[in-house]
Length: 353
Image (spheres, rainbow, N blue to C red):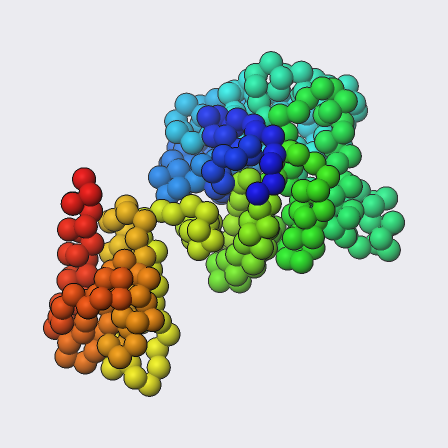
């Protein structure tokens, strides 16, 4: 894994070998304080480590103080164009800023933001998207965004902060084009030691956005690149958090309770395997142990193909097998298979306590 500097966002450490932090973004304005707070706390309960909020105007910036008092999750204020909003947000006690120094006006405005960030210990994320590159970088590439242009755009902004001797920085370079996003982060990881926030921006609705994010974020994490992630979906942000956790779990980076293994159906399957797998997946949420749980469609291949599973069931018409590490524990009536599996997991957790 790439070694990066470490920054602290409201007690959540990013980079420097810290666990990958999951981020999301509230869909409510800070002025809608009660609903924004409820959503942010729900995101935290679901597993979000940091939540970003849009701060489009002075009223929103001023509302951050009350919002921060009602939330348990670190909040990052997303600021564009008006440096005074960043100052007000820091006065209100936000835990981080997301800005582009190049779009908040004159150099003296950047200096004011940096000085207060230094005084308050507020880290700054430099966020570059392919759709908002400076015109000269677009012109240099024939009018189109490139991975190289995104990296140069990010490093320009980073240099502005470095010239003010400020280094509590996180960088993100995002695109809705997955290969471009991956290439940009690979280039950036070779050129900087600041922690990187990964994401495919404007990824789309739940299905398509999750697939695109899993490919882009997953490819980089497998390379050891990335310190914090967001799955951006046009959907309930709770689904972003669930998808992010599943990406980390699938890569073996972090685990959040049991992982379900289930086979695709085939002509040998004589039960409603889809329904069984979905029910098991839902009911596994009560458990905390990092176990591998298998739901297999037949007793012929089930225990063998899922021999690495801690516990599993191989379903059959009328009856099925309950097994552990490839060894059959016993035969169970078909309508009792799920309960038998869960009882076995429950006994395992009780014995560990």
